[in-house]
Each structure stands twice: as C-alpha cells, then as structure tokens.
Length: 271
Image (cartoon, rainbow, N blue to C red; front, side, top):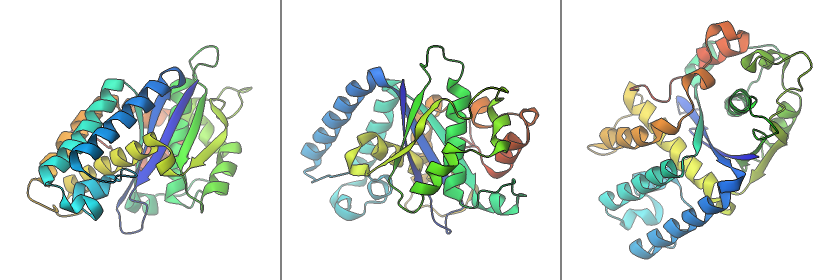
C-alpha cells in the first residue's frame, strides 16, 4: 500500500506554470518519515528561534513573514536540508508541470477539463496508475491526499471516480480493467498544517515552478544568484522524479498522452 501527498504551486492566472508535486511513500516506511520530518522541523525552530507552524516554500525562499528576520544563507540551508532529507528517504516524486499558455492553445479533449488544477491532478493520478499497476498483490494501491482545496474537492472526487474515457490510453487500460484501479476510493483532502509531507510537497512544487520561470525568463530574479540557487535545489530533487516515460509517455500511447505532452513542460529543462 502506498500514500501520495500532493500540493501545487502557481495556481493563479498570473503564473505561466502550475506545478503539482506528489510525494509517493510506501505505507510501511511512512511512520519513520513522519518522525524524521518532525525532528528536522523541531531543530529548525530551535536554531532559528522561529514559531514555525507550517512550511511554505515561497515564504522561506523570499524571506517573507517571520522568515524576513532570517539571514538568506540560513533560509537556503533550510530548503537544501529538506530537499536532501527526502531524497535520502528515497521516496519518488510525481510531478505535473502544466503550461497555462500551452493549455489555452491546445484543442480540448472531449469531454473537456476546464480547470488547470484539475488537469494537473488527473495527470498525477494517471502517472501513479501507470507506475504502480504492474505491482502484484495490491502493493501499488495508492491513497491520494491533496492539500485542502474547497473549490475543487467535489470536482476532483467526481473526476477520479469516473475518469473520462480518453484517459484510458495513458496507462493502456485493459478491456476488463477498472479505471484507475490503483487509486484507493478517491482523493482525500487535508489541511496542510496537519500533514508534514503536504508541506514538503508545497516546498518542492515551488522550487520546480520557480526553476521553470527563471529558465525561460518568465520572471526576473528576486535577488542576485537566485537562479543558481533554485537550479541547485532542483538538481537535488531530479533523481527522485519519476522517469519521463511515466510523466510524458510517447505519442504512440494514444490521444491522452499526446494531449498531456502538448500542454505540459519538462520540470527539469536542464536535465
């Protein structure tokens, strides 16, 4: 049994990219990960003397809120520590990087999915399905847990309960196979401060989104050396992102894969 904790960055019209990251954890190893997360967060609170209730990647990186008083080098070290820690835990990262301009240009599937957040959420579910359906004895069955999104809760539940027919080809669904049979029931929503790995997913989504923006020049550096710092953090995460054949199957996989190839961008443009 597996659990995938999901959050996104860039869910507003001004952002060219919406990046959604899922941290895929084997249930048998989850407790150890939760303990280590709590230990690291406690140590950061003690060293920086901050009343940290929850991690927010953008606030740490940009030095806003109570992070304003922290030296930029220490803030970088916090980000680097969490990136290195999760890669040592050896959990996989499921990433969907949807380009707003490309989504607007692409011919919609039928029936269409209008909201970019839902497009990314379905993409995460399809990647999990394709990645895990080869496991025997239900070892790939996955609980999907998203950061709370009250506007999308019911829409996502409906979408995953009855996925569109055109999504079948993404994972080569067999004639008698139940759609998205690796996703347990439907998606669940939690408040981010109740789940440490949701906070870490937010942090990683911010890093990968910011990496894309700086790479194509969609946004200027907020401070000298930001691009190199973000690139370093993205490189740490890169080995744990599921392979391109899962997140962007080749065109022979069918119309669904072709559509996702058209509307997404590679989260690792320099890889």
